[in-house]
Length: 87
View 1: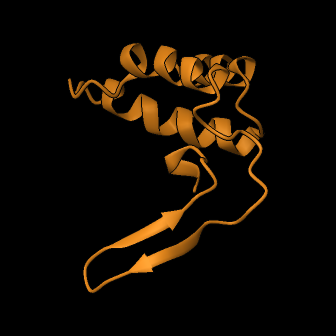
View 2 (view 1 turned 45 degrees about the horizontal axis):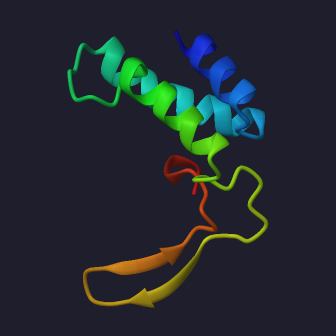
View 3 (view 1 turned 180 degrees about the vertical axis):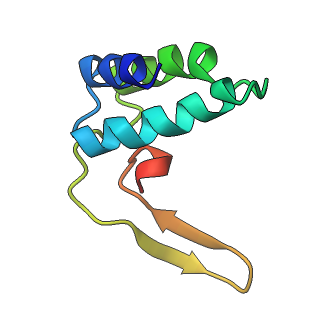
């Protein structure tokens, strides 16, 4: 299953082998554990590929994530529109 996800994300435009592996591992966990939270392969893979193709994720970010605003219990981080697990 992870190999399928990695291949789909790579063909969809997600750059970097590490990125594809990280996202595939995180996407497969709920499905493999039979956790019906909607973040498994069926719900996630198509959505991620659509967002990549539409420019919703920056697949080749140039800036490192940085804190924009920080408070006692929250922070705003500029991740250069990376995919969340990769930030």
